[in-house]
Length: 198
Image 1 (cartoon, helix red, strand yellow):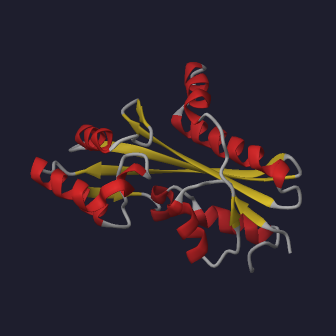
Image 2: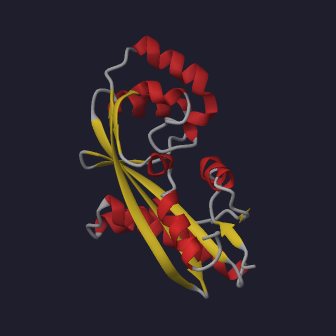
Image 3: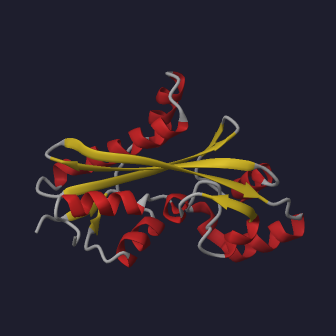
C-alpha cells in the first residue's frame, strides 16, 4: 500500500488525520513561510491563493525524501478585513492578536495539497467565517492562562476544539477547515486513488 506522509508539524492536523483512521507518518517542511507569503502578497495574491501555494510548497519540499509516498501539505491563512495574521511568536503577541480580533468577523482559508511523482496531483481550498464576541479583558486573561502555549500553535491564537470556542459568537463553515485541514475533500481524494477505504 502506498505510504501517506503529512508534511506538517501541526499537532492539530496530526490529531485530525489520526482520528479519521488514516495511517501516516509526519515530516516537517523547512521553508521560510513568511518570505514565500510576502512575495505572493506583493504580486497581489489573495489569502486563499497564499494558503494553497504554501500547502503545495510544503508537500513539494518533503516529497523527494519519500518518492513512493503521497505527501500531504496544508496551510491556513487568517484574513481580518485585508489584514493577514500569522501564528503568534509569543504569549504577548497572541494576546494582542485576540484583542484585534475581538468583536469582529474574520475569514480562515485552509488549503491542502497532495504530491506524488514530484508534482501536485490535487489540491483544495476551503474557507470559513468566524465572529468573535466582545469578550472582557478578564475573560482574555483567563483564556490565556488556560490555553497556555497551545495559543501559539494556531493562526489567530485560538483552538475552537477546546476552550477557545468561548471566544466566539458565530461560526460559519466546516469544522475541519477551521482546524486547518479540509478533511472531507482530502478523504474523498484519498478514496479516489485507493489510499482510504471506499
